[in-house]
Amino acid sequence: MPTMEQMVQELWDRDQILQCLHRYARGVDRFDRDLILSAFHPDALDEHGKFVGTPEEFCDWALDMHQNAQLSHQHCLLNHTCDLDGDTAHAETYFMFTAMNRKGKPLTIGGGRYIDRLEKRDGAWRIAARVTLRDWSNLDSIPDPSDLSTMTSTAHLLNAAERAFMNAGRGPSRDQNDPSYERPLTLDPKRRDGYKALIQKG
Image 1 (tube, helix red, strand yellow):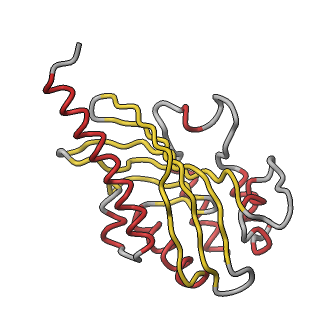
Image 2 (cartoon, rainbow, N blue to C red; image 1 turned 120 degrees about the vertical axis):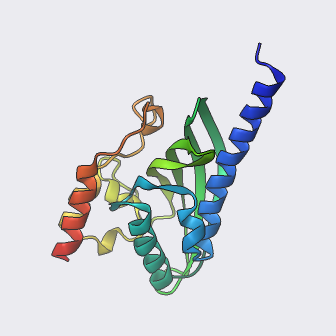
Image 3 (cartoon, rainbow, N blue to C red; image 1 turned 90 degrees about the vertical axis):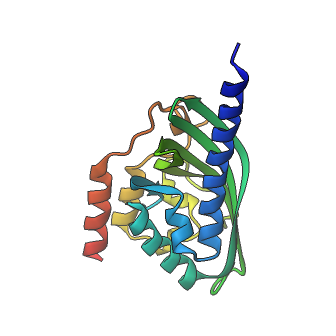
């Protein structure tokens, strides 16, 4: 039976993890770079569709993309589960993304999950590794489950190299092969190198 002190500590840790995830979502929607970065450890890696990189690199990519593509958007956090193991935690957080677009269809809506390994360092919980999974979107045609690029509303803008890069990453699975079961969640630094090479080619 855990002690009262242990139970309070667990409640505090869980709250701090949830607050970390909320800072991320608010930061992206408000174009608040410092708030986004406060959700990540500096050495974290994020695999986010065709993007793979550090928190600083993610801010460069995401804020530029959202500014150019949308008039407004919201990242809404939904179901949340978190497995605590000392100063390490693994969380799965459902999200729904909605956006008013500058071109094309007025509204984009989709949903997925943030799969995170979080670590408490110097008393602060932040994301150390993240894989972003897309589970659904309001597409114009039925996507091909074997082609992760078809789950994006901008699939028609992707070139062959970008499609290949996305499909070399991890996608959702409706069983225990899903990345949410991976312990510990890790990202291959070579994926970041591959992304950097991809954007250099233009």
